[in-house]
Length: 214
Image (cartoon, rainbow, N blue to C red; front, side, top):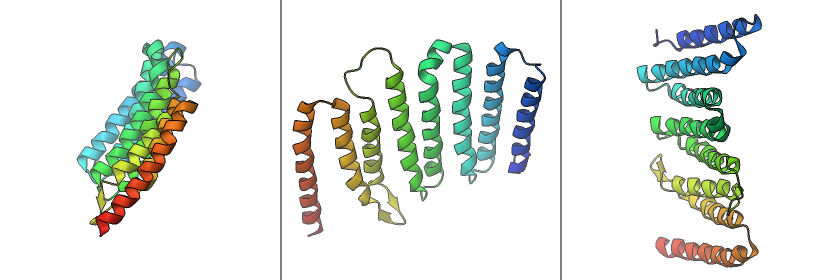
């Protein structure tokens, strides 16, 4: 059954249609609606992972499986642990999207592009988590997005594709990382310190690249 992806898609559509029909006729109590929806999402995620493990060339099944599993966990947390869900539902879903894109690269190393959205989603998950915390933070969470992007591109520079290293990733990676630090610290004093360091680091890297080629 799982060898044909149409079967699993048909099963998911049937479950979704049955849920919508029961909801339209008021046969699902309001208190159970979110829990049942989360359970259906969990079943769909398990089915998609089964499709992937039946044929590991179906990278899309693992990716969508992670997406849906994140939705399922967020929905179930909001239903059964609302206080925890209020803080973690968003970050968990964004982190599941990051895992989904990461699984694309793990499945096929030539699909290096998936590392970029994976890093973006993981960075957004960190931003979402810290912004949901009560109280005032000692840093700006928005800076984590650029720090994460910088680390993502620096990671990309260590990867080879088609026999060639993606060394170009270091050029957007370092400025994004340093800008993220500056934004996260968010004070005039930090700008005065990190700004010159960024120029020095950029110049040092250019000199190093030039000498290495010689």
